[in-house]
Length: 243
Image (cartoon, rainbow, N blue to C red; front, side, top):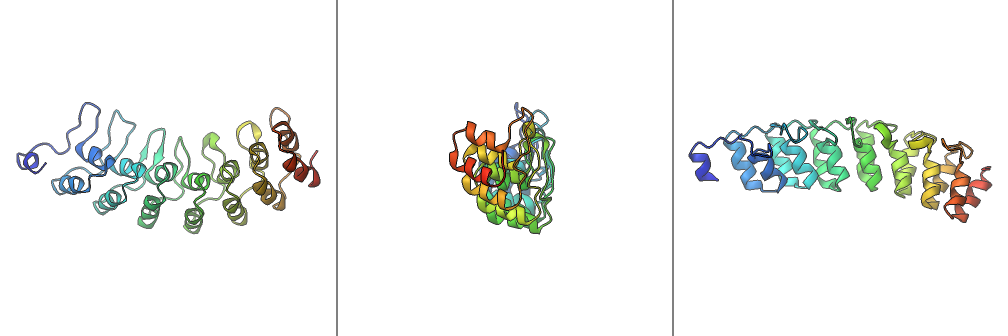
């Protein structure tokens, strides 16, 4: 690497896949190489034209390389650059299961309300993963509790789907819309009933979820619980006035 740089190799050249050396080093977690390239003038915000506008920071974040993420941030990487069809570094770090990277990005000032054209917003991704402390941090930083990205519905919907009752409780306390509609008009209660997530159902019922809303095909939460074979949940909904 040092020899190539000393021979005045173009540090911003793209390979046949449109990646730069900095992108590849960042994606693979090679911190020393990343630092050497940055010192030699590598463009920290270069994008890969044929790779959905991916940047080095996005690649490092979604790959979970915290030290590389710090180095790129120190080099003034754009925190909120968005890869087409996927989202920002913050959202992708959470989607891919790297909360340590997410904490670094939030502390550096990443937009907690970035709304990608595709994919999930940060709060949605954190809620889906069950990262309670990250959800708390995002909300404290001003994240919109009812953010809705395309067809992915809300953070509450995703926490209900993936059975994270502690996150559900926190989101409800923060003002999440308990009856927000998702795909086919489903509500958080409906998706929790379908998945058999009894504790989540209890939290939603305590928050006065409307038990008799119908999804687009006409089924209620009670219908869904019975159809999916969850008699305990059906009884909970019935006792709350479901029909």
